[in-house]
Length: 100
Image 1 (spheres, rainbow, N blue to C red):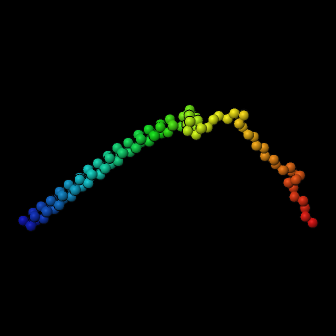
Image 2: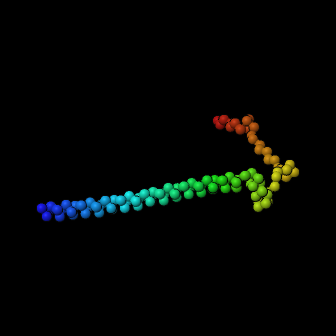
Image 3: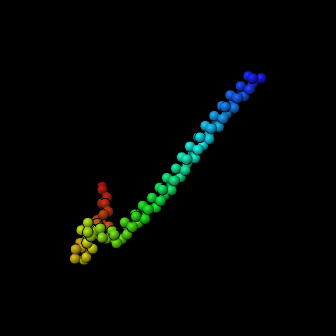
């Protein structure tokens, strides 16, 4: 009878250790999941902020200002415009002559 009680006691202790280990793993995984969710929310917020900054940087007025100040570009005027014409060959000159 004492042997059976000892076996049952050992089984009880082992199952208790397994239960504690399982609960510890569960808490550890829950904490990791919570951290991942928090990081996901931070990244989404940062992405939205970067999208707003990107839209602010790409406004036409800002692009115009950068083009004139940093690139020394100026608006096109007829006085500085050069027109290039492309001469296309006439259809008669483009047809090959038959060989004999």
